[in-house]
Amino acid sequence: MDKNTIIESVDYIKNIIDIVPKIGIILGSGLGELADALEKKIVIKYSDVPNMPVSTVKGHAGQFVIGELLGKNVIMMQGRFHYYEGNSMENLSLPVYVMKYLGVENLIVTNAAGGVNTDFNPGDLMLIKDHINFAFNNPLIGRNDEKIGTRFPDMSCAYNKELISIAKGISNKFNLDVKEGIYLMMTGPCYETPAEIRMTRILGGDAVGMSTVPEVIAADHCNLKVLGISCITNMAAGILDKPLNHAEVVETSNKVKDKFKNFIINIVKEI
Ligand code: HPA
Image 1 (cartoon, rainbow, N blue to C red):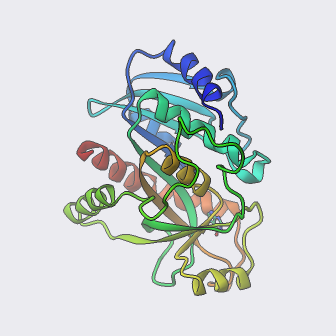
Image 2: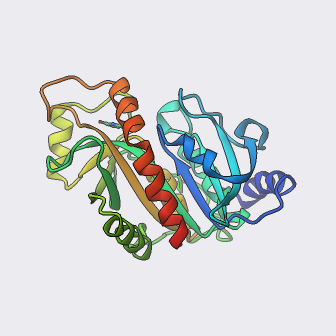
Image 3: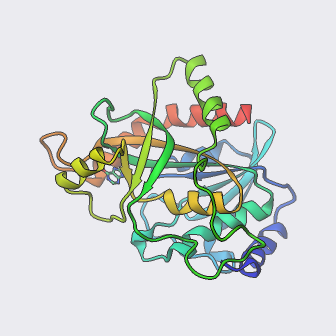
């Protein structure tokens, strides 16, 4: 990624907004409504921002929403880009760098995921402790601009421990049963086979999904503090004696969205 490309997108947005967002939130499937909670909202469509890829998934609005949440300046991505849409990993990383250069310091990344750990249930929330990159590609491949970050970033603390502890504090305070685990990314768009899910479990994955990892790698590269939260929308393939479908994912995320929204709002309060 080249810093000039990022700055071109950032300048477009800076000309429209008059606040400096400090917290970025990537809203995964079903969580887009959280943007309604923002006050003094400004909406900027991705398609209007120079250099941005185009989002093609149903239920993903495809815009930045910038405003105040509990008096804090926040930028949300209502709709994200996926690798399976045909985007390059580098393109997936652009919005993360854009948020960084707008002023963001803490990034909350959310997603819908399949539960691999059999102690999980659909509707559970999982704090991401770490990830496994099973997409076998990386947004940092290519020329490295040292102005953005180092060539060989350390990934040993990609998911910020302080933010995890804030999130755990909230779950204790409100008596929420929030799980913790490892997120494994597959490219999708097909769901996994039962054999792939058994493999994921053997490798230490607790949840499986088709996003998040490229964004977190970019965030780590430019020193953003990351909190990752998965909504377990279904048990992964082969765990239950029934096929998977996208409708189930949407249905569960709809059921859980209020709990998920409140959880994030309370976390934002404490950041
Ligand atoms: N697999 C991959 N991605 C997903 C799943 C799943 O089971 N559920 C929601 N996103």
